[in-house]
Image (tube, rainbow over all chains, first blue to last red; front, side, top):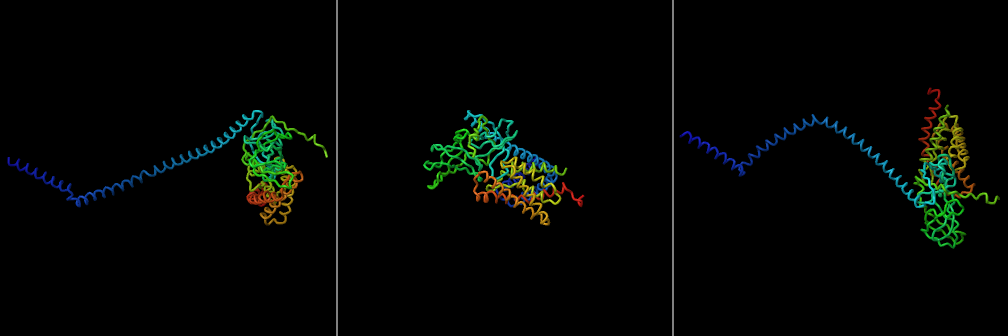
Length: 279
Length: 166
């Protein structure tokens, strides 16, 4: 009975001491000692953890690097393929837009029959403004046929072989097109130059010409069908002592960037040279 | 058999000229690749087919171009003549000869073209032709001269291997 009492007392004292220590610890009375202890533990665990991670990296990194490199090269190849596809698609979109515009133009002008051709070259001489197209006599192209784009007049066929033709642009220095000026209701001749500028000549002095007037083919002379758009008057040069006015024209077609053209194949140019008097 | 090499080189030069180089403008002037190739070929020491090249190249360019056919033929013949005269006199400085032939050849072909077009009634201001066509063309041809000369020299060595090389 006495032993049982003393054991219960011991247990109670131990619980009281432990509880007191815990209470003192929770109350912050042992903070400096517990900080030292837990800090040491944390440092020790950190040291072990770092070494383990370093060893683990050492053992596993080569395999990951190889797989990453392989994956990287695969992705780079895929990016290259996609970039090539993007460029190809952009080119196709550009061609489709041009062709759609040409189809719209041919639908808007049903009186003419068109044949599309791609521009495959330019004249080797800087003096001449000719382009070479990939349609020839096998496609029904004949000398003298007018060439247009959806924007306006380009020129006319100058020479033809079986599968190609040479087109004289209206910017060529030897090109002369009979035109009429809308609103001013006057006819004139449009000529090219070595620099690619086009100018209007033979405009009577009493004509009220303004910048912005639209220039169209007149059809006079039978070289071109009437009412094909050429461009707009940019500036006018009228001097009292000249017989005629001159004007600079901004063509609607960008001749440096022609890719696809339309040839009007149902137009027969009139050759009136036999009617000209022989000197 | 050696002359067969002329066909692909002439064809390729005219195609490149028409399809690519004619689209690369400096002001209104362009380089003349067939002219530079012909000059470089005619200046090679063992080459004996420069006249054939000049006529074939002139006819080819005349066929593609809107120019009268005899203009490039005459101009290229003049270039070969100049090249052969210069090659005998300044053979120790081939690049100097190349530059001279390129410069004079460009001026000759442009002036001949100008004269023929003026004679046929095409209006062209002289100052525009000089400042916007001929001078930029000369500059571009001079830039082409060095690489083309190097390529044609290698081609000539391949087509006409010397006794030392053999």
